Image (cartoon, rainbow, N blue to C red; front, side):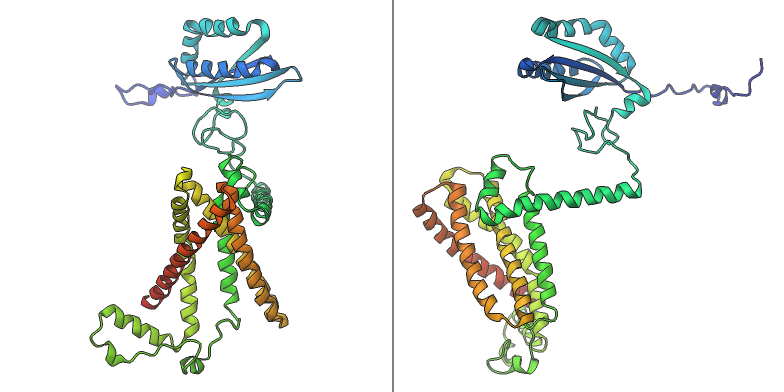
Length: 403
């Protein structure tokens, strides 16, 4: 009998056999229904049971998905991933009876089990496309990837982006309110493990600081803050004046001569100098964060806290500092527009007092010491950190001149 379908093996060169098909993973799913009052004991046993199963030949990994099953029962769906169907058949033949008997001996008829086997496309649909782990829901527990459609439509892509923005917005509001009005609250929440409701400390700091420096860069354009007149700046008592006689530089090191030459050049363009210096402030502030945390570590060394705990406190406090700076920038813009400069002068004093009291209260709430010890340690911290800030500012200005 003739056939129009060619035999694939016949097209191979002589002496070569067709490659065997690659083994296809198999999902073995077990749904366990147990009385709710036994859920705690059952979950503890189930975890141990699954670990034992994963030690058997052919088992790759497993996923436990908890579900509710009415008022009296809970449901636990376990999905095992095996290398192929042969490995599952070997399990049925050699180990299944013993493994099932263990659960019956412990819980008797107080639980029931249903089983099914998924192969081919059905099994592939139950595996994470990114890492191959058995799925217990929409998101993979191993890598976190969404198991829904790999290729989104334009509508889905826009919806996904909008969802991220709205989620960020809601978490931002939940984070900023206590950050401003409850000193130390966010730090305590994070250290106590209640984190999902709030933006992580580093991300919160970076977001607020980026907003501040972005607004500052806008404020520097068209503002009178640094509106220098080059002639006035060069005059005695001017706003910015570098007066250095070149003969005095003859015997100085090269870096001193370079510094002097740059300083004299900035006499003609002082706004460029301040813009360049301000551009270095984000880096300087980010370097000061771990320094601030180090001072806290030294001050509270007997509290036996990890350095990262002090760093989290540092992120939160500096985020408050930048929020206060954003408020000042906004008020300055309004005051400059309407000619109400006295408002910004009063606000600057208020914000300085607010940040001082905030830091004291936050230190007391997080480190849980009395007012006397807290005030003493705040005084030491303010002195040393003030010196560190002056050094960082001097380095920023010097590096601007040497650039």
